[in-house]
Length: 192
Image 1 (tube, rainbow, N blue to C red):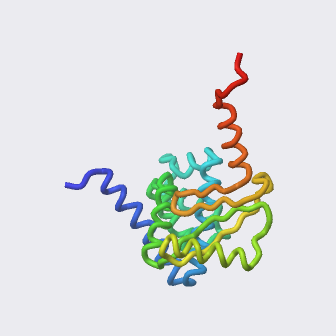
Image 2 (image 1 turned 90 degrees about the horizontal axis):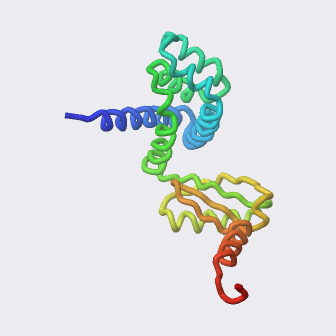
Image 3 (image 1 turned 180 degrees about the vertical axis):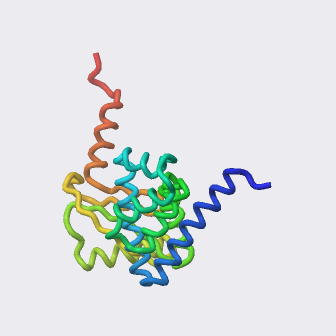
């Protein structure tokens, strides 16, 4: 007999699968990646706005009202994403969005053989460096890679990459932090 955890996992996978398949049918890989980015932004909005999250889970609203709220708030997003989010809100499953987003990323890699790699640097990547990073990531991950580039002046230099919940931090900021920690823990000489 299935447990609640199994049912929940299947529900999350179903939402993600419907979202991925619908986006792919509507616009191919570009639409799939667009939906991924939009879902990530919506997830950030939902996490930072408790009133919104509470309203989308509030059983005092009718399912239709919760669905309409999603349709109105996220009308500028991909229609497939809006439809899936509306169904989730109607069924009081909106709190599962972070799990659906994670499952979507897993299915994106499995079904389309594509991994999205977030790359953060101090300056914009040039074409040569972009190509080097893409080829290296494809060799390491064994999938096609799409780079999502970010600029963060606080890194001071170097690069920060993340994919599939794993992070490679080769930034100057993290190297300085490591050196600071090593020097702080050192007990060689000079002590009274």
